[in-house]
Image (cartoon, rainbow, N blue to C red):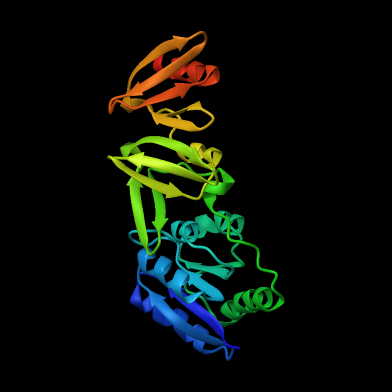
Length: 244
């Protein structure tokens, strides 16, 4: 069976050059070309490729953000002009990292690694940087079916644990994201967001007051009137931050 391939790059010339490399290998078929990250998320989810050849820096969503939003088993080869992201690429289980301009021999080497993983079914799941706890971000990406919501971190009011998901509340809207509270906490600015309870992270800019309602028990009231339990450890973190 031909290897189903998706090419993702915001530059038409770069896509054409990658397509020429792909056309030189007899076991490949390009099922989609995408000019931005939103198109890539949709194509990957709908077409279930075997191999994704993707740039790092693109408008709307970068290559790592695309991988954070998709599911499935496929080989990832980054094709980019920037060498500083190589370590991150391998940490998210990319099979190779190619620097532009890519020569035919180097492309075939990367392609053979990808095909070997696909045919032997030894693909490792793509890991997101959020799962690695390595990247703080100024925005949260949430996939809802075929839609992608980009929520600025500063717009978040509260994050709540919901089984295998987190519920992000921002601007009067609620979003579900498949991620752990620990992963979400690692991505948010600790100078602005505090985990006041094992199941609750609040934006301290939204905090209206903290009240004692029982012995050693406190409740935080946000500016929208919502109230959330504060654990003893959470209260200590709040005090440290508010006393600065």
